Image (cartoon, rainbow, N blue to C red; front, side, top):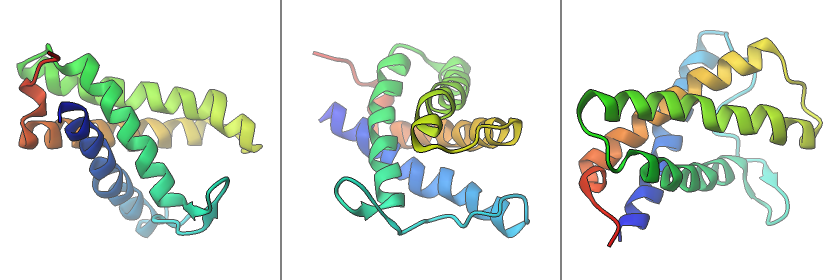
Length: 137
């Protein structure tokens, strides 16, 4: 059950925090790409935003492993910092090159900002669901 809560935390944080901030940035004209992309992506043809959220869930499980022993301010700070750096580094150094997408200072900055907000969302959902205080048996 703990792993499911961590997955759901990451999944929901992607839909609400990551894509929510992405929407605000798009509406402000800072990001030309529209959020909540429903274009099908290979290999299963699921909507892009669902694929992103599934990966957000997997990242949420990893983040829980790192956060489960931390309390107080450190919990929130670590969620934001790790949330910002780890997924962004993987996206910019692995995913973007594999997809033939350009990696720029802007994509790095946008990734760090969106994923930091995602990390905050994961921490919030983990706290709401009680995952933050669960232990591996």
